[in-house]
Image (cartoon, rainbow over all chains, first blue to last red; front, side, top):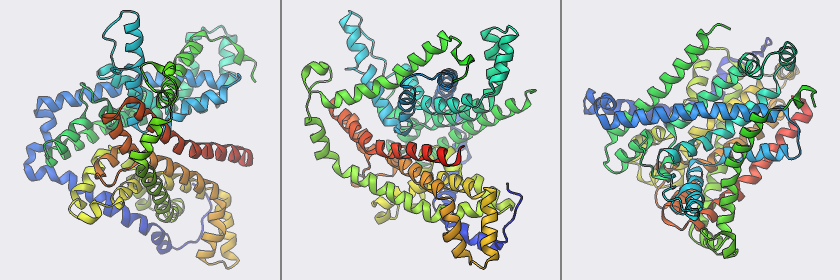
Length: 272
Length: 266
């Protein structure tokens, strides 16, 4: 926040924001308010269907576990790559970095397709496996395929932010630790991790929220491992059950928010 | 660079190598698959442009539609977002902070929910529902916070506040100040916001899949359709088309970032 003030009158400021506010109110606030109210019209029980129906509960747990696993893996791998790329200067580093962050602009459907190219029915891995007499290496349509696709989708963001954060790290601390004889593990734990903590929290939150709501990836893979966005889509298109789809959307939003909130509390409560 | 940077780190190197292969291999695989006669046989089957031609025949309209919706999103977020960013940068009221928070919600809330909500309220308006405007509205809701955040951060710089105050004491009207002083000063941020909005709009699928109709298809919608119903080679060729559309924008973004770094040194 700046310490200076400009004497722009309040009404003028309000007028500046009015078009954006009107648009946002008409096309997001109002529709979402309707969506939140919708399950109530079918009785209050509709709100709790994710808890009372074991199929939906299973789908929610699937989504939650998958998203947590993807977030943890992304942070570890993204952090390692980011630290490495920030420290090293080698030929082709810039090219590698731009190749690694290029998928940031790919929609989930493309990422799902990539996994099909790798591990689908005509995929490279099953093909190679068959060549060496190993059958049944098709992994694209199960949990592993979904996990790899989500990982592929979230790694570019993590690598980009970790590289930037690691480049800004204070080298003197690490040099001091090394001079004092700290092991590599100690340096990682006591020097790198605390300095990268803010990045980890911010990136982790984005990766987790994106994974919870990801639809295109799972849609392309037609995965046997059902996640909530697919459940919502099926309820809406196949059964035309608008109230139930709305209820599941709300549940998905609430669970995502609750996990992020808990993470923020846990980080805030830790002594620094 | 730095002396300590030379310390060997075999584990980090191995992880970087593995991640690099995992990230780059599918891209190369996909490019190859779109240009060979048969994916299973690979390069041995020979190169062809047949699949690209087939994609162009079936899906050319989706490329145009996506470019138009992308441009529309940029235009709409400029008109709505830039003045709004100014208000958020200058106002200290609680309402402004609350609005800033709420405005970013469509990024956090799953796209499916936003799409469902839009269909719930506006789905009955047949002519709106069946037009590209329906998809455009969804994209603008989703991309607006990116434009607002980027430009608002630029408006907050101290020297800009001083500059605006100087222009005001010299008798410049608000419109003159806004268009003659402020907008040129934050122009790089506005361009960055435009490129970001354009990229996001071109690649948007979660909302668009719900909002589209058989006659209003965008590039990612067409992609999903081809992955589900066409040969792997056609899907790959189509992916190649997507990359050809998105890559120039990304390069422009990177070039812009480099120019900014040189000029402002941050």
